[in-house]
Image 1 (cartoon, rainbow, N blue to C red):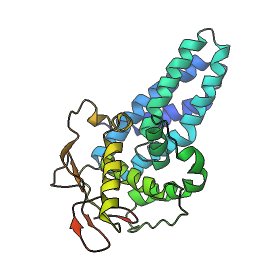
Image 2: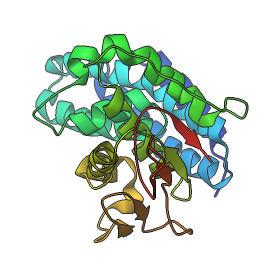
Image 3: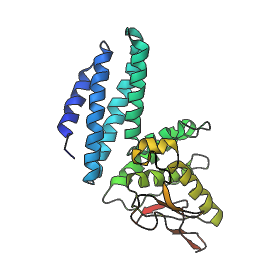
Image 4: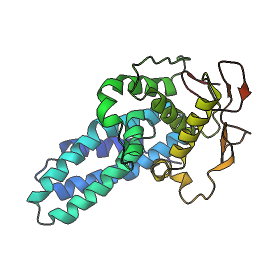
Length: 256
């Protein structure tokens, strides 16, 4: 893979100077930027450069998504407004999916867009700091524990499921220990996490899983192992009562 960081910088600067008087030009610049960024992300992925992966996703989240959202509003002033708006919406979704690889808040919102029952539209303002901390935790060399304490109903358990699913999307060889207090909760969180990974949205964020018939090479009520994992399992844990199991659970997440 080739280092395209210079192309990303040039296209970023070009997008910054684009105004809403010329939406077709803005769209073309954004499209070039996406093509460069997806290749640069793959380059960073091959080199295990987590910080660069995060910076790419952060740039999309902070600059590209807001500009494209505003551009859609201005397409009504263009002769080809409807068609151009559709193209920008499609490009916006591609950028959003790419940003969701390392921006956990965007991952949560991207997954939820396909669901009728929403959680984060009510609680994200409160939980956003937790998501932001999780982004740093996932790429940090010196953070080794993340502890979350929230009032009931904010989505803490759901957050844990999303964190695990996203972590395995980024690294299918990662082994994660999750601990809970009961066998029933182990089964529930495992089922919910597997449902996220099996979803259409997950495959759009991590396209290597598109058109994969069996995303797990092993799964049961307590565990799963992704099809491209080089080991025997992705999850290993135990309940508060000491019942050992290959499992997914709640409360604290520690990569091992």
